Image (cartoon, rainbow, N blue to C red; front, side):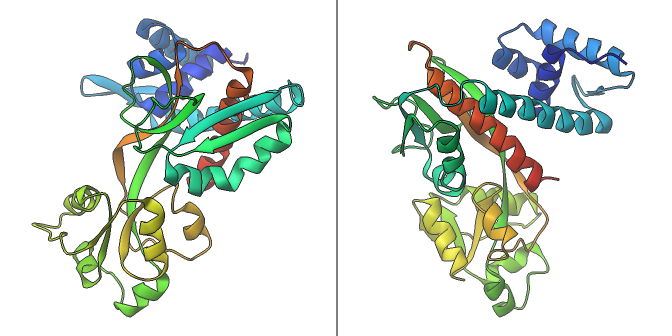
Amino acid sequence: MRLPSTQALRALEAFARYGTVWQAATELNITRSAVSHQLRFLEQDLGFALLQRAGKGVTLTPQGRRYAADVRTALALLADAAVQYGDRGLLQGAITVSSTPGFASFWLCTHVAEFKQLYPDVTLRIVTPPRLEDVEASGVDAFIAYGDGDWPRHSVELLSLVDFMPVCSPVLLNQVGGLNEPVDVFRSVLLHLDGLGDWLTWLAAAGVVAPRTDRGVIFSDMNLVLAAALAGQGIAIGDNFACHHAIETGRLVRPFDLAIRATRAYYFVTPRDRPGNPAIQAFANWMKSRLVQTATVMHP
């Protein structure tokens, strides 16, 4: 069997991430019909169905989802190879990246040395914005923003969707005698970020009727929420980025399997009215490659 075209594979990977043809087309800067054609041609080349009807739209078949995950890994390896053997050591200059505090603390800070090893002559400055969706700060070359992706005057690329779930320390879990049903979370203090919305959404999805969440503690920063959770002060709503390492090392546990997909996501955002910056593109390529590898570990 001949190898599928890279363009078709990129169309599949983008469709798998976004779940819609129009969003995949926007990212790839091609028409919706072009994405649909690429997916159909790819199905013909592969000899199995990638898509299935779902109401008025289409979704990936189970086989299509598995194939798309392998394609994502393969594309990331190709991008990683380009990073390692392409212009490594040739790029110079300084770039400033604005990142949400949670993403910076729990992801960038655990991987950023690798970028410096690849590009030792690029000076990287990381700042945090006053708002998670801020993409307007002056002096910033690129933004890792958390929002709905609607920034019309910018180039926007999805980095990762976000899943929320309750997390707590194993010490607290033992203290409350275990959490067998979702309503049992009220045996402890609920820890909130900004407001009550995340807990209300999760409890509604878990079928808890008329929950009282207003007796918890509200924090302004995810670092504070997780610090309290790690110290056994209550149960937090964490996400697949902020809590991954703590769960892997056993410092936090997930008392329930139920996770909810956030309505917002992480995006890589750059102003359209600025000239292309090779160092920013190298940073974006490195980050996307590393995120794919992280996602593979989090969701094997």
